Amino acid sequence: MSINIPVRTLRIRYTGIGDYNGLLTMIRTWIVDQGYEFQETVNKWNDEIGGHEHELTWIGSKNWTEYCKYHIKLVFHTWQIRDVESVENGEKVQKQHFKLQVDIGGSFELDYKNRYEKTRWLRSLRDFYNNYIAFKKITGEWYDTLYFTNYKLHRLIKEKLGMETITDASRIRVT
Amino acid sequence: MSEREILVDKRRMTYEGLFSVADLYSLIDEYFEEKGYDKHEKKNIERVTPNGKDIEIEVEPWKKITDYAQSIIRVRILMTGIKEVEVEKDGVKIKLNQGKVQLIFDAIFETDYEHRWEAKPVFHFVRTIVDRYLYKTYTNQYKGEVMNDFNMLVYQIKAFLNLYRH
Image 1 (tube, each protein chain N blue to C red):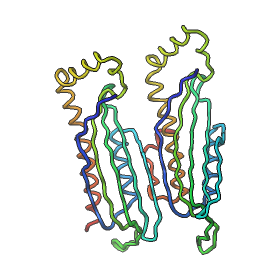
Image 2 (spheres, rainbow over the protein chains, first blue to last red):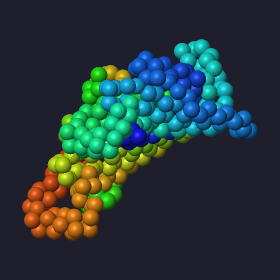
Image 3 (cartoon, rainbow over the protein chains, first blue to last red):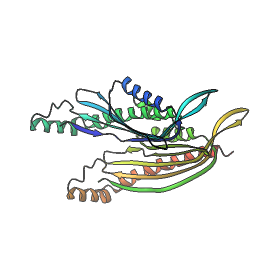
Image 4 (tube, chains in turn green, purple):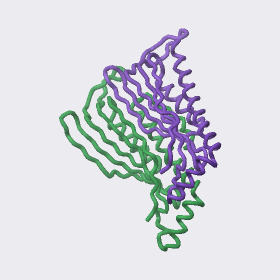
């Protein structure tokens, strides 16, 4: 079996008015534009009295190298979604009021093609490679690339929601 | 498990009045980036209420000092009743925020964060002896580095908030 290494999860919570559908479209487009293969594993919609409840899980996967594969995982949970009319630049716009929680996480998979699975000797070789030869590459380069890519998405979501804290000093770490 | 020593426990700073939320956040973010910390924004919560915005942010950046020791500075920022106001300064109108902000800081010194010295009880014992007696001067030096980073951050935030007092 391949080895899965999770990255730290980032959480955003927002209560207020925003363009909910626009947000989801923007995130989906971003995942696809970055070259990730898009999957929707959970999509639950409940009609409640105070507004709708929506649960979504999205996974974006991308082969980073022949040995390493990235998975970005987004878990959305939204409550009390209801349509409201908002005025922007003197024009009436249809928006939504909602309570949103997004967890941005993911993992990277080593030996995703299971090339080192065939014999015990190869498995030991893989462990040696991961723990000694490529240790710095895995913990530094590959981990950081995925982690700071998640921060790019984190910042985009904050921007789209019009949150106050949209700067990101680490933006230069991933091109 | 790695060993965590809390050097600063829940030191608080409170400010009420005019300031810029984006600039305060940016200051903290840039500070950690400059000091070589890896960013970790655990939580970012924003609620829009009739009395203004309530914002809660928790960042826990870490910096590897060596392969064995790392520094963690946790900052929790709680802002309540944040409203946007327009202020005239030197004849120029600028947008600022008004509200209450509380900052809670923790500084942590963590050893054996790669969990390499915990496989056997003997390893754990050796690690403790080395930490306490043989490497004591190095350990104290690293703790000093954590405290320096922490004090500098507090100083910069204080200076930043004092700018708006006058």
